Length: 278
DNA sequence: CCACGGCCTGATTC
DNA sequence: AGAATCAGGCCGT
Image (cartoon, rainbow, N blue to C red; front, top):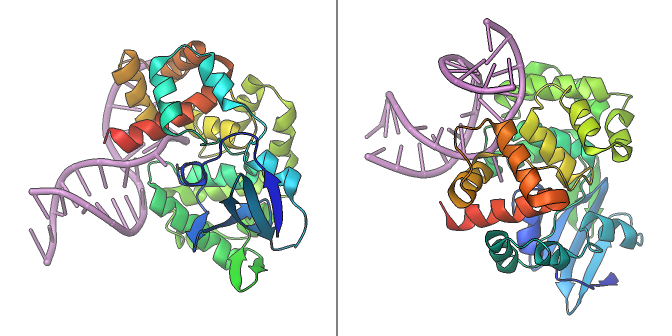
């Protein structure tokens, strides 16, 4: 068991169960999930994260990166001068925007299109269970997310067995593009926002919303701003944005309004709206 | 560029 | 009951 001392607030519940990641679960006070291909178990204890993982390795820098622990969110919202956003921040203080693995993140959000969280989780977990590599922490068994090679060996019909519906061919198409060529997305770490957005839009099943999710939740593009149904409601209801504007225009309005940390602010607004404004 | 209809599926609603 | 409705959108026309 290892420990990491926390320098900023961290709230694991809102971070892991706010719809940005789909595979974490909680059992007897411990949270289980994956960082890249490592199965990991952790909890907050005093002012530390206590963790262990399937490889029995020290994993500190990976956890700090994954949970965005060095980023000072207070500063972001303090400098914003936006009452509504500040309320959302205060309500979910300690929520973090994760830095997930781009490959799993891309497939997850392709699957998320016009769906809901339980169904998305089920598909991704089923894919992993059937096609991933088994990992263990003590007696707890997990499975890594399948590689592009594994997924592209399937056909559309067998992918549909994972409740993917019409998204099956998008998952297959994207997997094929990335098979033996994962750099197509990992290289985007080095691209700017506009260029990585353009690159992501070339994958089947990826439109403006999904691409912006992948950019903010895995590729460290904090300017990205996914506009989904909930965020659209935020913009229209709470910021007076014209409902008739296209999604693209709404996104651009928001990025112009919220600035370089639009993506992080978006996640708080999204979660806040979902919790309180059904 | 923008508007519109179709689309898998499982849970919920009436 | 069994049919409508709804849910983190994308794609083709």
